[in-house]
Length: 271
Image (cartoon, rainbow, N blue to C red; front, side):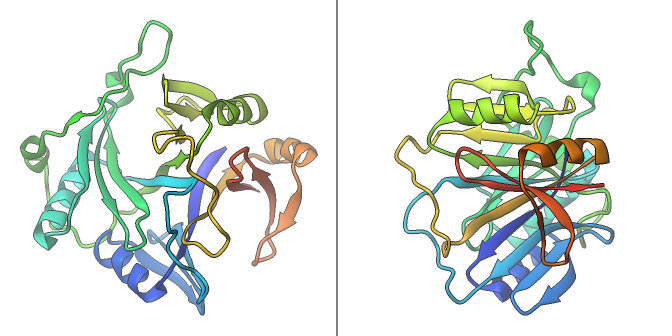
């Protein structure tokens, strides 16, 4: 399965749209009364849903920790960093993970966002058990800014939804579900988080329990994650249909609905 897009519930659709356009440089691809699709010129990456009944959660909830937009090159990340500096927009963090360099910020509803660029795969460091070495070292901001090439106007074509990071209150059940049921594999693991993929990437999905065991399910009318979308081959799609229900989305496309042990929804479409 390949990550395709993510759908979020937001409080103020206009406010959120302006954020994603101005701060991230995403393009509005389609607009309806209560929905906006944003992405690059050729694909939707983030869909925003809004409703008069949506309100910010009163406490930390199970669901999205952050979504991560993968830029095509390190130079594009440098261009984006300069853009953020010029706007004087607050960055929550900046890290060097060895296999990638990343910037972290929040949208107006508090949804976490990572903007990052990968290093070449031949530079990724693997441990003796085959998993990737995972660190969160400080980002060398000056060295990165030396790589900038041009003014950031909009997110470049070639940008994709690189991974999604979830937070929950129980890790083992999530690990068992994604590894045993959906054939993901552990790429990195620490006692409180897993980083998994089904095609050798450093992670398509991460799950952590950093907020502790007491965080609870989000309510239907609370802002945050709605669902994650994937695409897969016809053969794999047909096999998933045997285990999970098939439904129709608003555009009458068929998808397989997957609900994980934390009640987080994924939709898998056939390519």
